[in-house]
Length: 58
Image 1 (cartoon, rainbow, N blue to C red):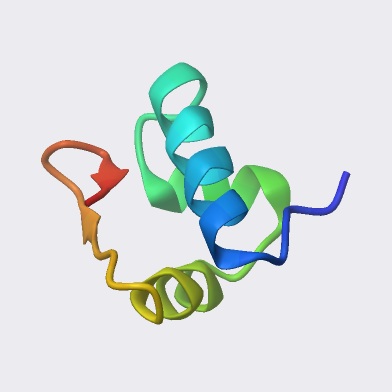
Image 2: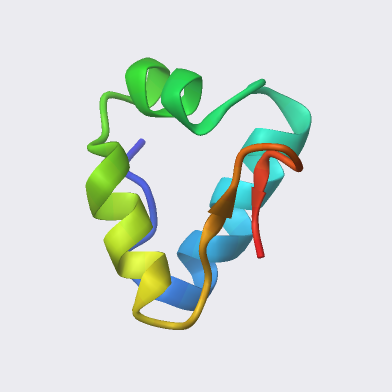
């Protein structure tokens, strides 16, 4: 299943996946075969940054 392309929907999807299934963005990216930097860039465009300590975009 491809990940959402809309940044707001992507934010919700990624944070839910991080909360429920993955201990880090790196693990999520590897498991879903997606580019971690692309996710960071897309979510940065709407004002969100990855916080590794909290394991979510804030």
